[in-house]
Length: 281
Image 1 (cartoon, helix red, strand yellow):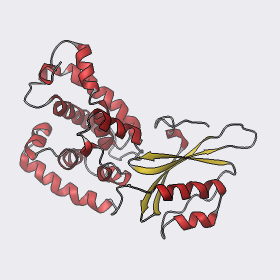
Image 2 (spheres, one colour):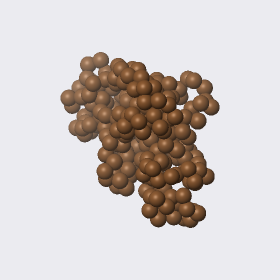
Image 3 (cartoon, one colour):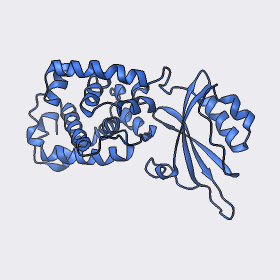
Image 4 (cartoon, one colour):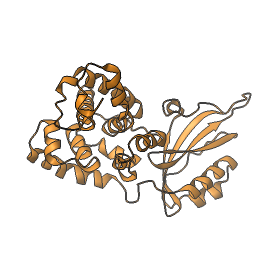
């Protein structure tokens, strides 16, 4: 089934074609919502809506572009039905980002570090939903202004105006060097310091002014390296007295500059299962 045949009645063929873009569509929903958990739900809704609206695919754009249009409107409808206060941003596991490149190697812009970092995704949530969509379509996906305008049902002038307002607001909220590249050595030092409860080693790996690490850590702690949003991260597991297993305790996502940790974002254990991390060791 080719792109031009997407409106056919063969549900199995439509599903196979849509599966090719599942990972990158979920990343798109994640940027729009800031929630990894909700992105999976909206991906399912996007594909269901695409099947229901398959007759609207006229072949004027690629099937991939059409799916992005459906996903964008699905997210905008979801945001319109929610309170204005944005929810707390969740991290996105690199396993999903790697799936994008495995399925579509040419889609590197979809998972590039500067546009998927935790700070960038959080900054997106500060924008009104339409501005958010414009910035993602124009600056992340590289869509022309005319195509973005057609997707959102607005004029090219409105798209350009929204982009001019959105760019500085996001730029002001994303610190320099926050793309999340590197940091392997700092990650290892951080993990060793936590497991050994070595305050001096911990201070040595933290940059001056970095957010302080929580003071009360369980005595029996295991640290497992992972990656979120193209940034080094540590899944922490604690074993409490009388227990045999180490259970999910916290997830630390690190921002590293010049070999030292400049920021630590801590997430609770409730996200482990959502992110595909084991809840016990």
